[in-house]
Length: 143
Image (cartoon, rainbow, N blue to C red; front, side, top):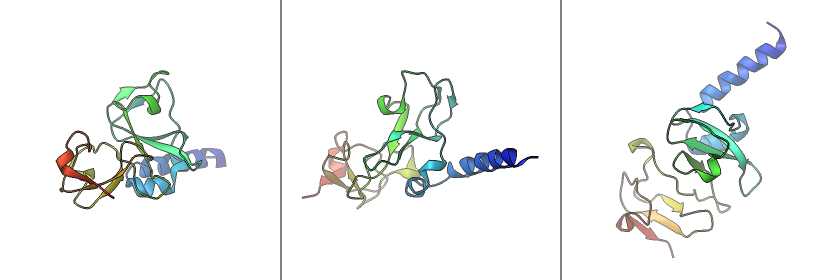
């Protein structure tokens, strides 16, 4: 096996491992994730990069519905298929739709909603999988 083949296998192994990281851990190594591409079958929980975030780093997205990508279904315009992962410039996470109990928000968790420019909300309950405008009694706006 030549060096190029070894490097490709190592990159593939890193990308497989990277799919198991938390959002915070994933953001630290965003360049390891594959770039989104059209015509690719994506499974739920798959992480990809597409475009750049506010600080110029690759923007991470998590697949929330299995599908084969199309050129007009880019991650930035299809929230039914992709959830953006990231932090606002003040290091507060941007709200993203939890995929289940494992990544639901808990009491005291803080998020910007609906985007990095939105107000900061604090979860009032454990297991919170609802957006602040969908279940307002589960959130309070920070002053």
